Each structure stands twice: as structure tokens, then as C-alpha cells.
Image (cartoon, rainbow, N blue to C red; front, side, top):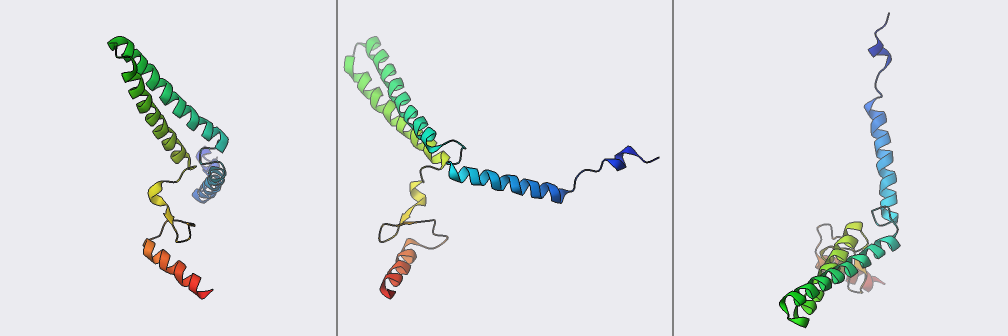
Length: 139
């Protein structure tokens, strides 16, 4: 009589690696089409707008409460409206950057004619500009 452990062999690691690679490729394809989070860009934009409005409302409410408490009517309301708006904009920017709908400013370069250049891969901006100038003079 054979041992039960011999009948139930686990699948090979190669089969698991193939299934894992296939699943990762599918997820990566979905992330590129929809901004990285699986939600539509419209939904991500709506979320960013809610972040800004929430910051404004929170700052305004806090400023209004401080004004009523201290008796300095417009001071804290205006101050916290500005701070709340800035915080809301910062949160919206972070959200859109995290989803991939906004590029980080440091990662983007401009070519001489305004076309965006992807990461330089070790090349300096001057090298990219020189290559573009050489191409322009050839034509």
C-alpha cells in the first residue's frame, strides 16, 4: 500500500512562477489603462475635487469656530480658509500622483521644442538637447 503523501504531490514551482507572471502582467495592464488604482480617471478626478473641498470646508469651519471663541471675526476664518485650501490642494496632488495621473515635476524634462522627454537614463539634459539639435540639422 502506498503512502497518501506520495499521491498528493504539490504542483511544481515552475507552474506557479508561470501563473504568477501571467497574473502580474494582467494587473500591470489594468493599472496602466486606468491610472494605477483600477478606478476610472473620472473617479480619481472626483476624489481630488473632494479633497480640495474637504480642506476648504474643514479650514473654514475651524476658522469660524476660533473666530467665535476669540471674538476676532474675520481673522481666523480667512487664515484657516487659506490653510485648508492649501492642504486640500496638497492632498489632491498627492492622490493624483499616487494614482499615476500626474507626473512628479522632478521626473519630467522638457526637450528644446517642448516635447516631454522620459527619464534620461543617465544622460544629462544637455545630451538630450544636443541629440535633438543634431537630428534637426540632419533634416
